[in-house]
Image (cartoon, rainbow, N blue to C red):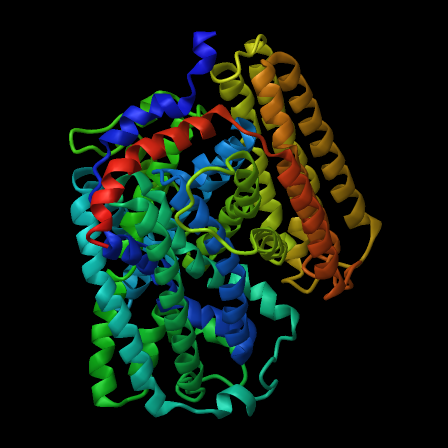
Length: 632
């Protein structure tokens, strides 16, 4: 009985309290701003223009609105319970260990890739000076070696001084605010309004569906999702209940403004002749010199001596710019592993702190994974798209968490309280769901596959470590079977049956034929039956708490299956004539999302870790908050 009364939150509390509170408002705000404006301002204007044309401005505004709902939901929760590793701990407070494991798995395997993306952005600009580092946007082996050196430097900074990390981030943050705005202002002298309406195809040359397709695949959502840096270091922030929501919202809105200004300036400054392109060949922008550094190259192409000189300032900042989100992202992923240990989904060794009070085991693991991700994703836009989709599988829980905690912790202190919470939470969920759906089946099939590969780890580790499974051998066997069947089904049904034929058509779309329908039906049926069997065996072997946690997270599993099925039959699937064309596919997806959202809110429960977290937060904030109010 004594063992049952101790929560993982209480076990992690010692480490939480030893983390140094050294990050103030400016450090936290610029951690969010710098990550939002990391490599995105260097590359996203090019890729979004290539994907949508002048209408990419609408895509940026759509992305701003969609992500803002998620930001506001996290603003309330992070002010209520500030924690390091918060993205993986909040689902645990609201739904228990099963859902927190699945979303945590998506988080760490997704955001480890973000570190890789930031380093590849640095290399893309260095390749302008050293062409052997990257060829047509893809790393060479020489570029890979240099990338590893950058990651090791990020590791050293995270390991030895969070305080120095915060100071350097703030300093570079001011430069990243001023230089992009100056660059955009200079480009306005070469502004050609005809690029928006007078070139062939007009303002929206790729059609309305391209507006949403660009969100996950052209770097727009990738750029906006850096906001989480403001909440991931909660236990290391001074006066966190006030600092975090202020810094989070300020950093997000400021970065969004910079992106909109940059996109307008970039499109207006495109010189088709200098790029050897036919006016209106937006997709052709990817194959030009702009792919080696969009903002730097477009300034040079003006031929103006002053702008050419300033292009080297942009180049210098371009090399520095992704460094801040790179080292912050590496630290955040390590806090993700730390948070997984704090929820019982990883061994407590990941809670261990170095003599400099940093979670060093988690940091070493994050560093090794970041290096590994260089191999399968050697280009910025590919790794960025993958990371966005894995991130969306974690952000989709923001809205449900907000409402569940409103019910299960109604009396907890909320320094920031979101108005119209039910509406805002629903919009946050629908926004994340639709953004994932719009990513297209060509990306979602792989994301679904990676997401489901985490389930066997839950079976083999968490069921025994957290829920006293009586059948550990059966869980290990089931996990191995799950991996084997999942890999074989994916390869023979999805990849060989659908993905490879679709890629062979160069994106033209497959004919609507049973030859491409039955492999998908078989795959979904096999994976659904396999998952149901695994969860049935798990529920039968764990204690009462484990059963309640598994039941509380079932909606998340159903959500994953609904996404891949809808993606296949909708506008963004593989068929040249989709079963459900745009916009009706999006309408149906929104309705499905709303239904799942209602289920998720009803599934939430009051966990013992939530009670322990609220108690600890109250004790930590009582005395400091009175003193700090004098200075705020």
